Amino acid sequence: MSVPTLRLTCLDAQHAAAVIAEAARPGDQVHTVRQDGPVVVISYFDKRYPLDIADWAGEHGHASDTAAAAVIARL
Image (cartoon, rainbow, N blue to C red; front, side, top):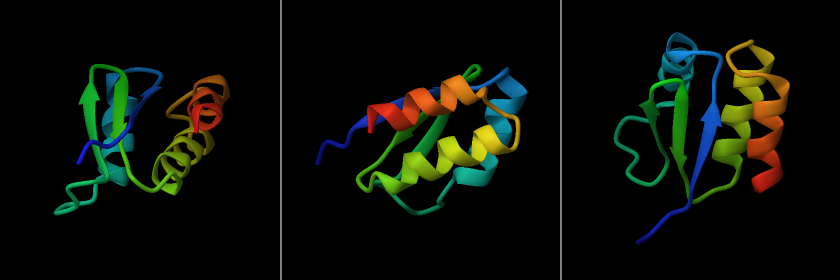
């Protein structure tokens, strides 16, 4: 099964790591996150997963409001 992916640009690699730590779902093969430098790559089936990640990252200062909104707009 192929799932869509979105990329959330964080402020830097340390902020991306914080987002990964919060969003990771061990054992979930469909909803996954991985880090590519300052970018969090989100694979998902349920659109709420990237929505929640982008919202959380923006609220906690790990990504700019613009970057979080760009992910949400692509949903």
